[in-house]
Length: 66
Image (tube, rainbow, N blue to C red):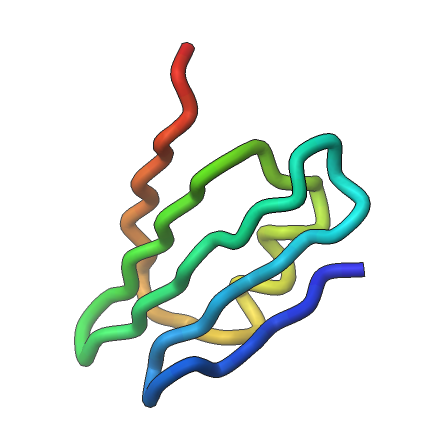
């Protein structure tokens, strides 16, 4: 179960418990687009949660190493 916390106007922390590494990703929604900072691996349901938070185009920044 993904949990979403609104930490500021248009800034969300998205938490996925029960992953191998429990991490938090961040979604920052601007006036024209949004930025999604992914700090670890995310589940398949993650995208649908993000789409419920914004309909703006999303730039994804992934900190995972190849």
